[in-house]
Image 1 (tube, rainbow, N blue to C red):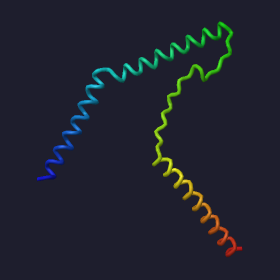
Image 2 (image 1 turned 90 degrees about the horizontal axis):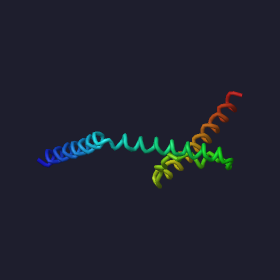
Image 3 (image 1 turned 135 degrees about the vertical axis):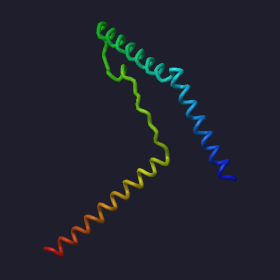
Image 4 (image 1 turned 60 degrees about the vertical axis):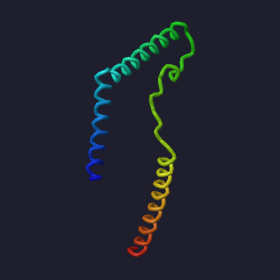
Amino acid sequence: MKYKKLIKFCFGLLFFVFLCSYFTEIGGYYEYQLANQKNLTEEQIRNFEEDVKNGKDINISDYLKNSRVDYSNSLTKKTSEVSLKLNDYLRMVIGRTFKVLERLVG
């Protein structure tokens, strides 16, 4: 009986998420965001052209928008550290194993 309620809840939640994403798409939110990015880009091009005409110092980083989003958190950083340490350890073990095999063959 509890499983049926849980399954109904999960399907209801999935249906709700689907409806939210569907209405977001129909409402044109994604296209609106793309249009805003295009407008910003055109504005930056105009600013660049004006600065070239005026003979100002030009630095490309002033005109480019940083679109990279950093999704890292403490868990991903720690996982990356563990992975790098494990990689170093395995490299050391494999290197020593080949040295022992080299001595046995040679």
